[in-house]
Length: 82
View 1 (spheres, rainbow, N blue to C red):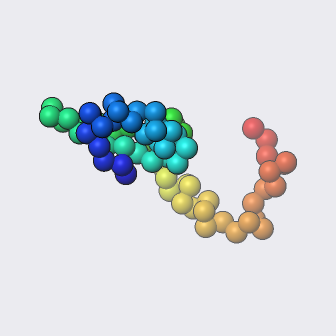
View 2 (cartoon, one colour; view 1 turned 120 degrees about the vertical axis):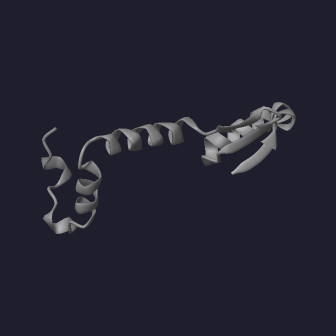
């Protein structure tokens, strides 16, 4: 995580934004009133999806169970019906 203050963030905003987007590097921006964290849209969307999945009862357990399933027992991608 990159740590900076608001003054340095303003001076280097384009470089910092580029790093955050390109490398998914979060930025902690400190001010006298508190801190803020900037993350890439990709990371934000991932967090929102994780929160959504965790809000579904038993979804975490089903995902963990699925991770233990051998590939040979899985349905081929082209045979999945959505």
